[in-house]
Amino acid sequence: MTTWDTVVRGGKIVSATEVYEADIGIKDGVVAAIGRDLGPCQTIVDARGLLVLPGGVDTHVHLEQTGLGPEMCDNWESGTASAAAGGTTTVVCFAWQPKGGSLAAITADYHVKARQARVDYTFHLTVTDPTPEVLEVELPRLIAEGCRSVKVFMTYDGVRLDDRQALRVLAAARRNEALVCVHAENHDLIAWLTEQLVSANLTTPKFHAYAKPMIAEREAVYRIISLAEALDVPIQIFHVSGAQSAEEIARAQARGLKVWGETCIHYLTLTAEDLDRPGFEGAKFIFGPPARTEADQEALWGYLRRGIIEVVSSDHSPTRFDDPKGKKFAGDPAPFNKVPNGIPGLAARLPVLFTEGVSKGRIDLPTFVRLTSTNPAKLFGLFPQKGSLAVGSDADFILWDAEKSVVLTNELMHHGGDYTPYEGYQTQGYPVATYLRGRAIFDGRTVTGPAGGGRFIARPPYPMIAPLERFPTPFNAVDGRLV
Ligand code: URP
Ligand code: ZN
Ligand code: ZN
Image (tube, rainbow, N blue to C red; front, side, top):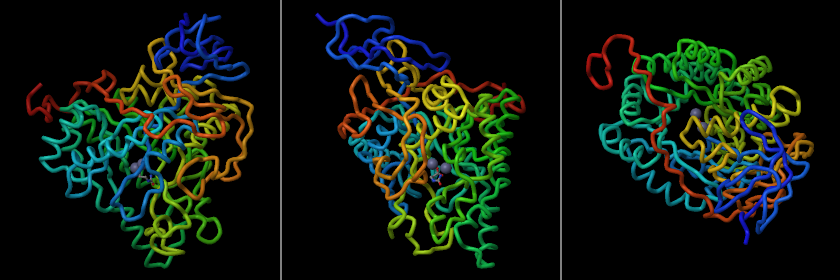
């Protein structure tokens, strides 16, 4: 009689706090035991000489969003193949309300599309039009069904909310126990700078960074923190690009607020100079907020080490480069403000962060696991099912070769795109295999996980995002009562 379906034998397990040698016994897709010399099993996974990491949790992934003009080149099938190839076993993607449309209908549609997923998944709810129907009927139901995070934009025509609308969403999130994630940039400053740049005929990709300076981000970060503080609502600031925004988050945390920060792998590796590559190549690096400076990168590493920024995501938001539905939507070349924002990053996130972080001595192994798996799982209510290799957790893991050097190519990304911003980048450290709930979904070369093998994870309320019950005056404005 076998005790375990699978035993992962002889590897070094990395948790959020330590590195230790042990075997993992898996039963019915769940970690059932951790110890030495675990007994009879059907399958042995030989992990000698390898690290065993909890599967990556990427809480910022755009797949198969439609109706935006340019076309996203990853659907659920190709996007989650890319996730598996990079060691990510759970993604959080965006059910994106069309302006003037229903959030509930698009979420129902997104559930159908997501049935093609090869890894586990859940949804953020992007609110672009906070009508009473959305705030009072749709959001409460969708959050109760397990989509326990809401995204709002402070910039981009057609999706951005003004402050009053943002306050309404913050209040709805507080009432319904959801985390609000924010794209924070000052819209009017960006719009005005863009007009000025275009009038001066300064329109090549490099001017994307001129139109979206750090000050536009810093101001919006401070503003949304203030609005959330006034209503006592926990928030996460998405894609923190540099020192000044991180500083605002640190100040908020020092005031005791539940304000968390996410940065992305590209802010740690690319700079605004990448926008100035020859010809139209810079368009491959147009995303918002833009990449900043090397000094910003060094500052971000410090904030990651100190735990002020807790999450490194991909913000995978891919369009093809050499394609009239992608980066060349408005022509070749096109002015920077007509080029779709966003780059691919799902498969590159872990290998590049490992190389830049662990292999170059900037962070240790447990910090790597915290930033890529445990912290995002905790923050978004997926822990301990995800983000951990403990008894009772899903057996999602990566066999990781810390020495493996791979030169990244677009083909290795296993996505639907025609480029990677990391073409030619040499890693030190790479996934040798990825497992989802005890089953191999990537063998180091080929994605073996079937489309449809992923499951939706409904997220019930969790204590981390409970409000503080602290208001600037003795008036709880969300519930309309004196406190
Ligand atoms: O440029 C980006 N980041 N595109 C994706 C959408 C977003 O803002 O997250
Ligand atoms: Zn954003
Ligand atoms: Zn995004």
